[in-house]
Length: 186
Image (cartoon, helix red, strand yellow):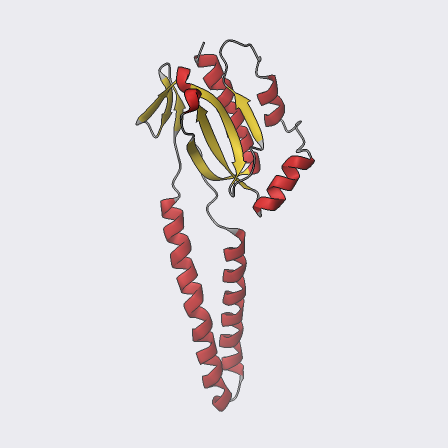
C-alpha cells in the first residue's frame, strides 16, 4: 500500500503563523483597554478565517489523496485490485520528481536477466547516494516529493502509479515492487 504525502510543508507553516497571530490578538484583546480590545478582536477574526479555509482545503486534499494499493499477482501488476497489467507488458519502474525532469531511479523488469535484486537492495538500505544529477533534478523540481511511473513495452504510454511520495518512501516502494515483479514474471 502506497500512501502519498498528506500535508504540504508550506501550508503547515502558514497555518501555524496564522494560528499564532490569532491567538496573540485574542490574548491581547483580553489585556488591552476597551477601545483597543474591539480592534484586536476584529484582527483575530480576520486571522481565523484564513486558518479555517486552509484547514478545509487540507482536509479535502487528504480525503482525495487516499492510499493506493499495488499488488503483484501471477497474472501481473494490479492497481487498487481492479486494473491488471500483465508481466510481459511491463518494461520498467521509475521514480520521477513531481515536476518534469529525468527519472531519478529506474528498475528494469527483464525476466531474461538475473539481477539478483542487487540494485533494489542497495536502494532500500540507502547505499545508493544521489549523484549530482539527481540532486540537481530534485532542486529543480522544488520539492522532495516524487512519483512512481510504470513504463510499458512496445512504446505504449506510461502509467503514473502513485504521486506525491517522499523520496525515501518512493525508493523503498520502487525497490520492493521491482523485486517482486521480476520474481513473478519468470
